[in-house]
Length: 165
Image 1 (cartoon, rainbow, N blue to C red):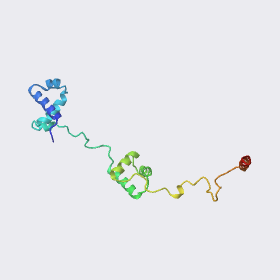
Image 2: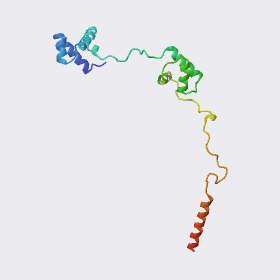
Image 3: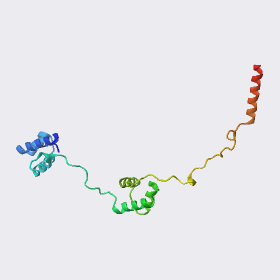
Image 4: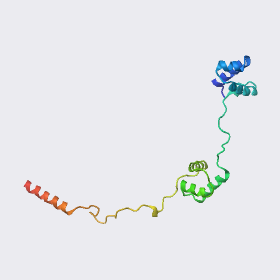
């Protein structure tokens, strides 16, 4: 671990506090007393080593809301027995068996376990929508033309031909 600028700054604050007082160093360096005392405690415990003034991890050591072992085994068993259902169906089945978390929490757990959250199979053919029209069997079945319009068109075409000659 390399010595950073921040560690050097904290070391200078503590050296000043040794010569004068914590209160004077707090005023001079514009740092709270509590912070200087906290640095000083770590610094003295390490034998006045500058590396003790490095920032530690802020990551929490535990999460009180993690899934319990019973919930994890329930989800694993449900996923093993129903590998092809989607996330919502899996969540609903788990709810009937005592799972109390949200669907987003279930999704996060499945991703952490390495399981897929998407539905694995396509819907059955009986679920597919049927076309709303009958397929055409011969040319011209799909187009519907009024006979009156066709006759008017033919009449106009004849008149144009007669005018040209």
